Length: 76
Image (cartoon, rainbow, N blue to C red; front, top):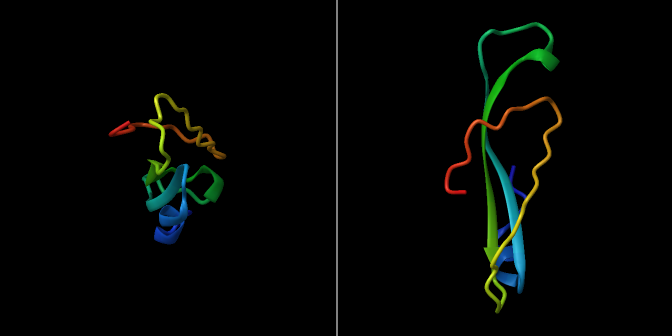
């Protein structure tokens, strides 16, 4: 799932935030209740500055809905 297109990036004249989900696979143990099934997922969040001024500091919040744990955040 991608939330931003190349056209969006080209037409943006400020700060563009993009989030895309790459993979999602169930982890053992496999359980019958889908709400309790653990998953491993990978996603990418990109902050693109197409503006004229340097972005000196920023914060981004990604809310989770199902008691997820953030295990790593590379290149952050």
